[in-house]
Image (cartoon, rainbow, N blue to C red):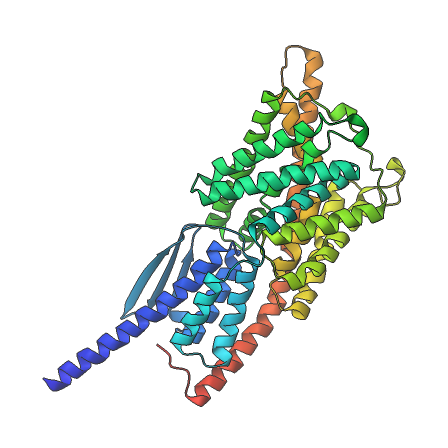
Length: 461
């Protein structure tokens, strides 16, 4: 009888310990999903955390979705499953980086479960690296940098920045109030576009490019991280999560377009593209400065560590200057290969991604922390707006009016190709490079676990 009671107590304690381990594993995964890590990184980090927790990989089953995590531990005779709901999503590159470091540190330093839980909670509750106003100002100047790349002068840069700063603060307030996420995007895009339109009423002699701020004022909403994660997930065969990310990206872009379109109709803004020269007239230095500003601004939105801002700025310069050199050429009276915007954007993103594969070892951060903010300045805003304004002003009543509609569709197709090439350029080198990096990391993990077993610190479930 005493033996049975002792056995029952032992089994109960074992079950409670397993419950806690799985709970810590799920909380780790939840933090990564909510910080918008790609699915491959989520699974890799959870498996490494499971190794620290003493849960063998052959007994572990992980299912990741956009709104739910599931972990099952099973050895054939015993099975335990637990779910974890995902409550929200917001890009937090610092959290992604810190969780990865914690999983290694916990193994190397023989953390107790209490120590691991304490460190994980610190990451979850840590204040963001930038205040809301710093993020808004960074986002505003990022949009101003876009405006320079679209061909505006520096006074129009200021107009676009102010409109975007206010739009970003409106979006933040909408999120804080609990308003629907997509409605907040539409409202902030509407406000930013209205303010950019209001700047066209200022004295004409202040700027020679009064309409350019309308092209860039709402680009702080561009869902670059969800888009690149969608491509990553699809290429990594996480099809279901990738499709959900793609739908979320589409809804965000649609909400943004709705806000802009509503402002355009309300203010009776005509198609101003015929008055805008599409031939680049800035020198490479100005484009480089604008790219650095945009990259750093988006880095602040993504909550990247302050020490990496200069690194991302250089990445943005490399991406944009490479894009321009491959894209431009004699046909536009520029120096370059004249191979077009699609090939140029792909080349810029591939080059940055290849450099980042090596740079992650210098700065000890995940690949996407360096690559995504660097390639964001290449977003083809002019083509996107050409399509949007073409569709808004669509009124096909005769054969002569078909040509503007076809030009709008052409701009939409080209912008889609450019965006997809940027995402592929970031994802493909990272996926191939990851295979080589993963083998060395797996070898290192096996050696550390072997050392822990030798010290008697590793207890397997």
